[in-house]
Length: 142
Ligand code: RB5
Image (cartoon, rainbow, N blue to C red; front, top):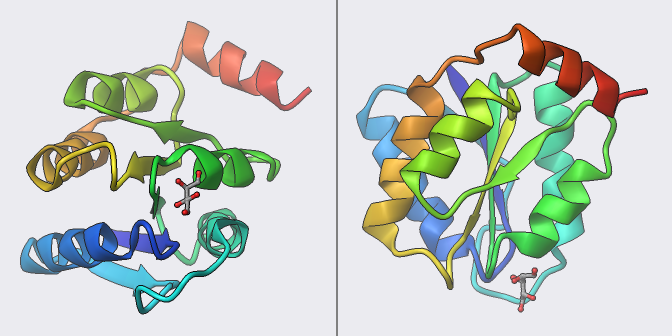
């Protein structure tokens, strides 16, 4: 499994924690930046991760900003992207089961590191349920 990571300065530290966690689990990471705490604009990193997923360079993306809101809004503007902003493991499970989310969005200033890693694990291990949910996600693209 390959995971594309992206964050602005607000999400940089949590992105690094997630990267270490995934590498320790033997998961390949493609880091799209940012690479420091210097202030940057989140849409650039949302797009870099989104196109990595759409072009199948990666299986899923994980994006982080201060709240997860701005970067998820930016990612969701791109056709084919379903970015789910999650605050707990229930949301992570359901955004995979029901929305077939291909990107997980996290807020580094609103979600603690330990919870964030639990969310990442739940997101990556959960399969899409298909069926009626497939019809619904297809309708998003109409
Ligand atoms: C950056 O200060 C902050 O606005 C950004 O990380 C994010 O929270 C936006 O939604």
